[in-house]
Image 1: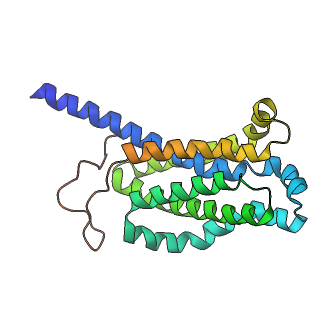
Image 2: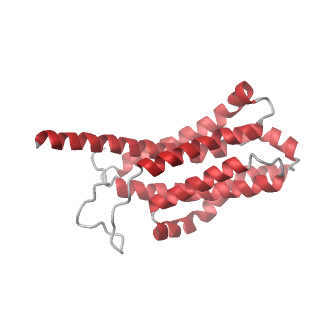
Image 3: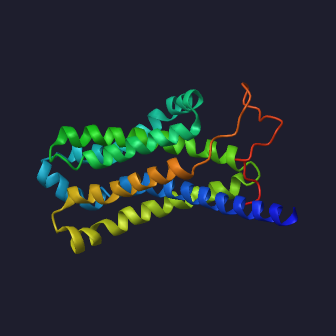
Length: 220
């Protein structure tokens, strides 16, 4: 019986580590897509024919959407659940990132940037909710990991886009960089659906149930 208890704790520990890794990867992907655009912005402006005003709007649009959609994203989370909300956010993020590579025109570029911006707003707003519910005893630690993922995603998007483009994709292949940062989101979505645990059961007024669900990790 003692061996069984020990094995259960080890399994739970490894699962909690995987869940933490998923949250870090969510943070990386919702930032790398945004910060991968400024390094190739001169190429986009040249090929699409954007004005300086439109170019500035393109880079600021995801941030504007994140700010404007945060409140409505929070309301949506309460209706569909936080895990489902992150799933929907990743779907929107992947769709927007990949589809804007299909056309070299201003309208699709802005349209799908709005789509991915909505995905970022939904996933980023919801991740702290899941952290609080999955890791009630380690909220600060896991939140720091998620924040590290955001910072790492910013660094990768801004610093690695041009070197990878020049080395593998071609000197003018800015649309291919959208695919480069969009495909990891699809992979992450698959792992999220596979490994992300269900949410703990909560009462109507947001209070945790008396029985501690197995999906709450407190020993990470």
